[in-house]
Image (cartoon, rainbow, N blue to C red):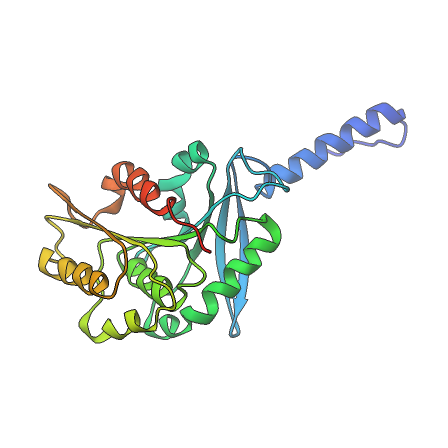
Length: 244
């Protein structure tokens, strides 16, 4: 239906204009408790990402921000949906990209992540001293990269169900700062054993990294099943740290 405003008085025309503006804003996911969609180009590739803005978000307020990294075959919104309610309670800005998580992509992490988050900051003005990263499974592997190879950008990190493989032990030697890292693993995880995750914990601690290590009973590789417990615990750990 088309509404003709030519013969309407100024007050009614103004009212219709305001209603239209609100509809457009909602369609693009703007405002508090909203999810908005964006894209980011790097090395001739365009990536999609979602941003959740809690009610506490204001243009002048600098909130902490959490970069969420999904598992293999997943997408950013998978992680966003598991964090939204908690982020609303705590006033956390969530950024959830969809990345390929392959070997080629991993080599780009040290340059891509800072550029990506700097682009987000232009629009959302988050606190640059409170930038955190949390990853699940293959996203956890990339999180270890971010925590070591971008250690001067991320204040702290969290990983659910992944390890540093021996052939990548070298990444801990490249860290300019000992990024605090939380690690979570289930006792029934078919992908990783306690021996592997404990090895990762010991590797990090031997290099001076603060580590919060949690073994979860009756838990497999399914992060969604544990998120209600893991999310507040990992945030309690990470949020204690800020960048200098």
